[in-house]
Image (cartoon, rainbow, N blue to C red):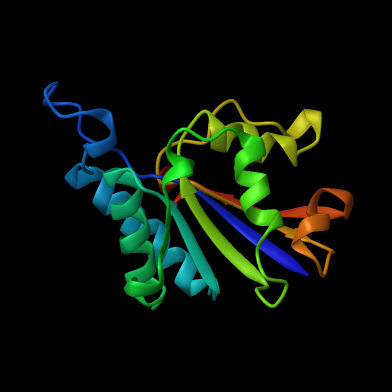
Length: 165
């Protein structure tokens, strides 16, 4: 069984138009929200074996807060620069090439890609309009091999938003 935790970065600051999008930092509210979600995940015994994040500052900050709360080594966060502007297919390709020994991965990135990714695994009646900031969607796949992920039965474990907590 493989588990994927899809995390949309926390709320970021738009107050300085001189800062390029890639380097926008989290707002204090964003930090609070993602910490609350991460603590909830820790209470649910979420323990990813690998964290992969976009190189954008807001995603990396989100991944670091998640790692701290989940007791994941900060120096083992995998920064993937292609996640910054990636489409769903590029994210899936990254998952396909994970070593099969890894059973669970947390990926941190951006919309609209992450909403599209989540919706690709949901039935039509369950699709979401938007994966909000600091939200996490978790899917479990009945597969032993990452490269076969899309071919195997899967189910939604949960979608958590900070407003629900």
